[in-house]
Image (cartoon, rainbow, N blue to C red; front, top):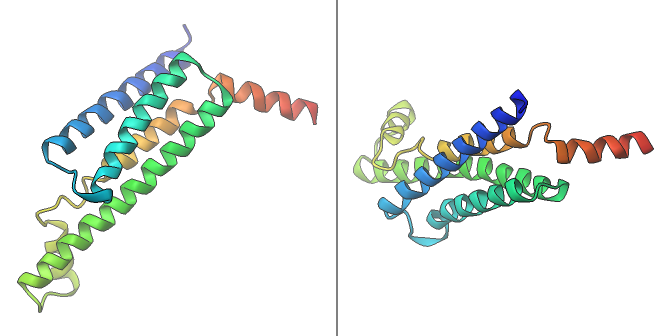
Length: 149
């Protein structure tokens, strides 16, 4: 077994364990109110399911869909950081209407809603994209297309 295959398996395991742990934490924290709170759970389920599908039936189309899904993971992580920060800033402004600048920023970053926690989705998206890097099913097709041109 090549080192690349072993590394790909390790990255897949890290993605699965990270996704399952993140999903469990979100459920335990009751992160289920409304669309924006349910979105990461849906993405985590889709990511784990699609990865299992890729392991069983690798193919170019499946890899491209997974890569697109991982891009959505990254975007959701960025959106989550922004939403958490905005929620904390709004709460801080209610507590202290005079807060502004670095004081508001610092209090918002340290707020009740963990501002940087959604960054986990960015990390998981990066792991998923790493899993697909130089994937044989994807590179074989692109090499065939390039050689026929």
